[in-house]
Length: 495
Image (tube, rainbow, N blue to C red; front, side):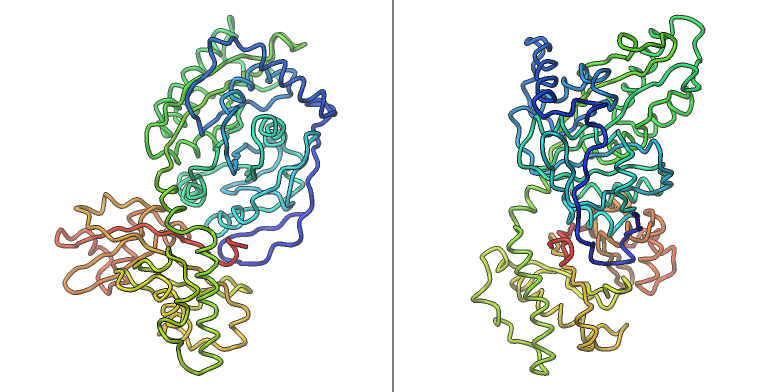
């Protein structure tokens, strides 16, 4: 069973099932006791002097059967011991399904191994699907070992976490940018980013035999040179290197997506490198394995989580819906302080916001109005703008009670806008932006460009047009820009 779920078609997900392992008993042991024992035994073999001492929230691990790759994978597993993550974001390649410019996520609500169940972050998957094409398919995930092989390792090292397992298809440059913008916001201070990838597959079985002699040594050089591009966080250099050499690194798209998500030096470090020759029956065919780790500070997300916790967000969404319902009942807007007694200290802060209304049945916009400058408590801004979006957006007729039941409410809480010296400082997917010239003004929220698949030039051209200016007005040296960021949440994402 599979279906496409994206930001243009909002729908409630069906009741979820548990996705059982298809690797137990073949790729790794089928009993919990034996499985834990195998992992523990390999961990004990790692020299004590090499034990890491710093927190890491990025891992690259191989995905072959444990008989081949576990000796390398445990170097990454040990990095996790003693750490606490509430969520794991797993990016794995697709070996069997053709997924051009797509991601695939399970339909299930949990996955299972001999070590127990791992709940899936269904709300997180929904949030990604609002901004990028996500195919929901249990069958794809049951056929894909690259994701499943990591589950017992995570269960051994971590406890009490949710999982977002994404199978990454082939991504062109534009899709890579959109996928980055969709996924990166979920990589917060409490989330581990795990990339599943084997490295070069060598031999006739893999249709890759560029070396006439000393193949093992030459392939090692090839892989370590590829990792050097990863270490330098040079995504374009990494992809160009693979194209130039033909190196058969199956996780090239997950790895490139990881590099696109890094917005600061991550100190990516090689932990261990090996190949399957010692355990392979074919001396002229082998696969190479690499474990690496790094750390990327997620300070912005930490700040967001303090600014508005889950209870604050749920409260604001409830207030917005109640404020619209109040109009239907009383034929007028509720008083400004109507929700004051129920409001937490966080949502009494003066913050600006936008409220966006979307029809669940079609995914079509139904209203969007907001304010850039904060001048009143957030709960008042949200309720007032929710009513404005429902009844005063000039692009649409006033909302009807019949439509109200089909409505999806999204709130974007804005950070203070700051002026930038050039449009080149604007980061698509991160920044909302305003443009002003000759008394004309327009604004886009951060999610607009990724939802439309626009690059920076296209975004600025559209923004100029929205301001009533020629499409190239953004190139005028007198044009001024400000940028801001947004904490975006909706009823579906908080379900």
